[in-house]
Image (cartoon, rainbow, N blue to C red; front, side, top):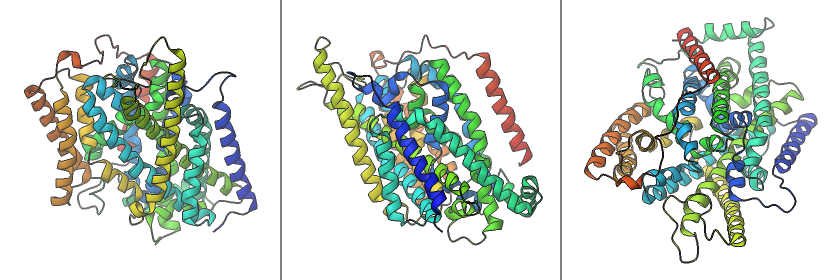
Length: 544
């Protein structure tokens, strides 16, 4: 399959337009230069709509569209729990986590750890997150994106790999987070519109002239097993989605870590104009998450009837795109590319942020000087030497751009060796990020809400999470990874609490201020949150 001239023209117009828009919003006034806060946090000026759209654009990419659709092909609607439970998680993040992060003007998650616990855990977790983002997240997005591009456009997959990586890098290289976030509203609009077209046309085809609702009815009647939201132990995919664990177990660990303590996600909310704007942004994102299974999972389920016997589940979504008419195919293909590019650019920017602010800036504070504990974006060298500080800011931005280039190159070169043998890319991501996720949640929850938590306990939790997960994975392979995350979380939590009593931290070590944090939210947030909860209850009641 290849794109015809009209479809190719639509894609080219999109690529030129979104690149031009990214460069336009990245511009600075004459005589001004981009500093580290501009580049890494969009000058802390993002409005709610940019925050909400950027959260979804960073999240929804090839591993979601291609990977989750592939899981829908094999498993069914149950995979939608990742999306629907995320909506509830976003409400928790907005109400309880963001007030603390924004009150303390946090730049990065490793910086929070330094302010709360000390320097050592900052370095440990910064290195971990860099490895995770480059070797798991970036590689998976680019790899699964290249599958879709190859399947739809007929381009050689290696060419697609390099092309996607290069475009995403160039797209955000100049403006950083501002270029990404302020163009994401266009990306998300295109993603939602294109996804709804795919869903509508696939269901209409199944309806055989009777319409979309008839097509959906055919799906539910002919594939009832694909509409079980809570899988029973005898289901062949129970190990991937182990029953009630998706509601009350390990999925909460994964979601809290991803939406609350994940740099390339939370960075958008940290860049908000104020707390209220950030909270409105996460509510907007929560409603978009409720919609995502309609445009991602349903086409994968429909592919079971339309394209049975696919060689790889991850081919389900690209196969459904072949049903689209000329022109519309180009638009939807552009939407898929938009999701890949936006999410890749977000992760590239976050890699650059963590490397620059948490590693480079810490060790390069000044000639012969150590970085102060809890240092942030630009350590103060000499408050009276403005020209020195300006040079320092230019250096940080330059280092961030170099880190972005290097990270992208590594991800492109390692994508095939790491993911070429996996049938479901989405499950690959969940399986291997789950090794350290329980420890991350322990560290941050204790750091946010328990003053006695110490660095010794936090480091022990991080190490124990990885080791225990590896032991369970090796010696108890039949244990669903979601249940494994729950067990490892409890063990890591107990260890962190015990060691915090044995090796207590000095009171002065904790620089995070929580005494004056107000967790109350406005009527708008509360009503919107109640709406999310009621919709979730209805969805699970309908397909229990």
